[in-house]
Length: 260
Length: 250
Ligand SMILES: Nc1ncnc2c1ncn2[C@@H]1O[C@H](COP(=O)(O)OP(=O)(O)O)[C@@H](O)[C@H]1O
Ligand SMILES: [Mg+2]
Image 1: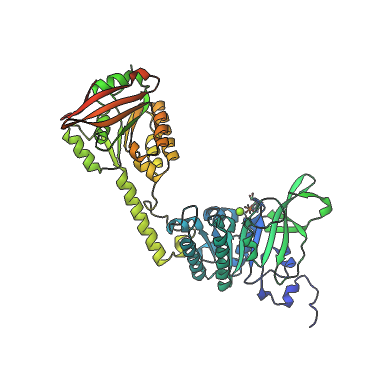
Image 2: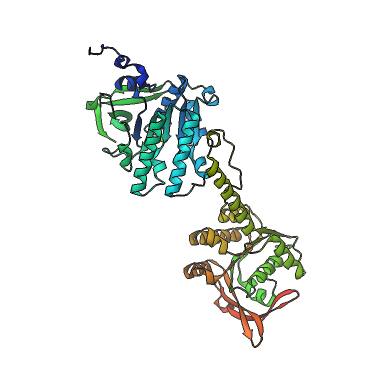
């Protein structure tokens, strides 16, 4: 086999159909064109590191290209997410009306199905997962974001139940063939990408968002920790949030202090 | 010149002791065993304040119609009293919600029911918190009111002991702020001793009712067992029930 031709998008050699472009150009370049289609990727980071913003951009980019997109919001009301998206120049209101982008308030699901108490029992977990399954079928979503897996899993405290839940969730996502971002809220300490540990076991990739100090400033940084089927750099990139989306620039470690 | 506050129970002997000892806003606790007359005395305390300002009567074991009927049977005008049947409100709303949830689970939820722009879940599908309901009724008041809750059982059963004592404190605080009084009925036989004790600490006075057997006769006995800052006021009264309500002799 001939080596792939050098170029800005080596993924074109494999065919862009296999890759789900994130819309963040530099990230797509690191990932050889994007996230492998059908994979589930953990987007981990502490509060304010840009997990929701990155996820929204990922979905908006998909919706623009005619890929149905579904945002399952546990922590923020859907109406507030729309407000956040308006800060993107490329956001178009029509995407919401046409069903290309659907925002779901998970707390409403809890309420309507009587799951609105602290701990979910096994039969309630089944009902919840069946509902997600039905939502994926109905929406025909190619891209899915769950923001956040952490707060969802918070209602399942028992170790064996959380494990079953994660496996079943992963099965459902795989069966529908969607490319999924699972948001993981973690503390600022390095070394872990999820609260319970089991989350990491079901994903094909991990994107880590964080903070880094430089000259007294705190920068947002992004790092691809893992991406199945993709040789990639593990370098840290500085993230800038702009009206045209997230911009990445190489992060020169020499200039940085310890990670926050 | 301020108007004189209305009597607490409409029982002159008891009111004569309590009235001068109470602050302008108070929280009283009425305890008793079932059958001792707590339901009747609670209604009489509501009637005693009729005409002096808003009177809120919350029933948890009786319907509004039953409460009204008892008022009328003693010749008390029920019209000035706002009667709420909390038991019915809560059970009906709980039932509505259970049915809605059962249906949603059976047919499955459509995306449109949870997506942005979904119609709001019909109100009544949520069981309201009883504490929230009481406090929303009481908190906006800026003039003396009378509140009678018969009884705390439902709050203790649906909420928690902590919530119940918190609500009692908040109602007392509001009564202190704007004047008036709140009487809460409690059945100690079905309540944790610690909760009873805590509510007795919060209350400005505690009246305990007993049914006393006297040969073949029974009569209610009132024990005024606590008046804040006035230990000398504690005493027992022999009660009776006439066509005009409950009466007492020292
Ligand atoms: N286009 C933008 N330009 C500048 N700041 C932004 C933009 N979009 C979002 N932010 C800010 O970035 C911060 C992090 O956003 P968010 O994605 O919600 O973080 P996380 O989901 O990790 O908690 C927020 O304080 C938000 O106000
Ligand atoms: Mg977020």
